[in-house]
Every structure is written in C-alpha cells, then in structure tokens.
Length: 296
Image (cartoon, rainbow, N blue to C red; front, side):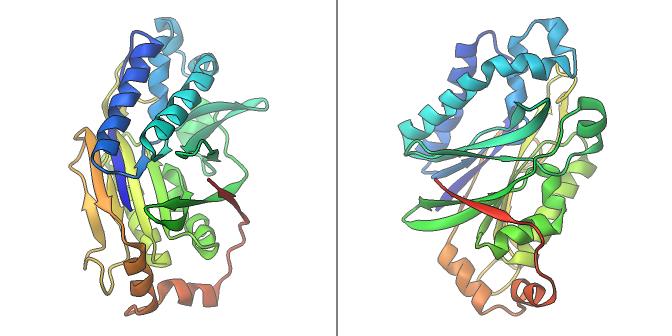
C-alpha cells in the first residue's frame, strides 16, 4: 500500500470555490503519484477561517463557531475527491461543534462513500485553556480494503501519539498502522510528536505515519506558526530499517511525502523479531481503553 503524508501549509482563500480547488490539487497530486491512503494534518481545516471577516478571523474562539457554516462543504468536498480518485483520505482535522462545545475531529473518507471520524482525546494546554476545545470520548480503529488487502488503522491526533496506551489499545485490537496528523508551533513540539511516533512504532511493532502543518499563517491566532516533518516509522528490527525510519520529509517543505508499506513484511518482522516488544508488553499489561472497530 502506498501512503502519502502531507507537509501542509495553511492557505488563505478568497472563496469557498478557491478552497475546493486547492483541496482538489492536493488530492490530484497524491492520487496521481499512486497513493492509496492520503493523510492530511491536524488543524489543516483551520484555513477555512480565512473565508470569514477579518474581525472574526482574529477572534480565537469566535472563529471556530463561525466556521461551522463550512463543515458540510468540507465533508462533501473530501468525500467527493475520495470517490473520484478511488482513494482513502484522512482529511485535515478541524474543530466541530459537539453538544455545548467543540472537538478536534479528523474525518476518514473511503472511495466507496463510507465515512468515519476520530476525535482527538488528549488536549494540549492551548486547546483546553485558551481555545476551549474539549477531548473526544471514543477511541476507534478503522478496517478497510486498501492495496489488495484488509488492514486496520487507528488515528492518534498530535498530542494523542505521546500517550502509549492509546496506540497500544489500537494495536491490541489488530491495528498494523497508526496515523498521527499533527500541528505544532515549535521544534520542541514537532520533536515530541516524532519521538512519540517512533516510540509507538517500537512498542507495538506497527507502522506510524505523521503529517504536519508547515509554514506561517500570520492572519490566524490559532495556527499562525507551524513547524514539522512528515514521516513513516517502524520498529528497528529484522527486515526493517536499522533506525526505523521508512521515510522522513524535510523540515517545513510543503508537499507530499510518500512511502510504500508492506504489511506482510511488517508481520513477518514482528513474528521473527530480535525482540518481541508487542508480545512482551501484552504479557505485562493489558490495555484499559475500549476500541470500537468501524469498517470503511
């Protein structure tokens, strides 16, 4: 299976149609390169706030309420692109109204028209204290037929990838791939995500893919500075790279980063590994988090 991970700049748009055209260009490029699963970053959907009046754009909490008018168009656009190109798309996450508050939601779109989502569970101080975005309750895993085989994958949004039990529960439920869309405004934050991703790959002997926002968006009080690298990581073991790095992009260079993922190789490496981190951890502790499996 070929995966593409975006190093995605937050854009500004004069109209919703301009935004749709930009989304189409990104999906067209990745699908044209043969990618079957496209991973966009956390809070890439905040670029929709550029369609709002400037006074609303500058309102940290007011903008996310005003952005809800574009949610249906966002979902329809990425759903249509997934169907058009016959690919799976994990869209850029965005704040979504949930009850009396907001959650940070990553939608998943299948080429057959199915849709799911994962809400971020662990919120950073900025999200919780300043932006007033809350954590989701349900932890999910998605099952899909991609690249001629059925795979299971989870989505751990940014800070979530720094918490071992989240990915461990997904791996224990059968995930071979964990996707980590991210949005960080310091090199320290970007490195925390990468360290978390590589640690989760090592602990669970799965592939972990990261896709960040990159560059500056001075107009936005929420995502004004963005730093990061896209990458795909595995456990350093037999049959896999000695450093565990399948691929890693260049810091803050906009574009797609691609990797061919061999799940047969991953499972063989796991079954005949030098060390059995996944198996040995299961022998020491059981995940306490429930995981709901959704078929796409």
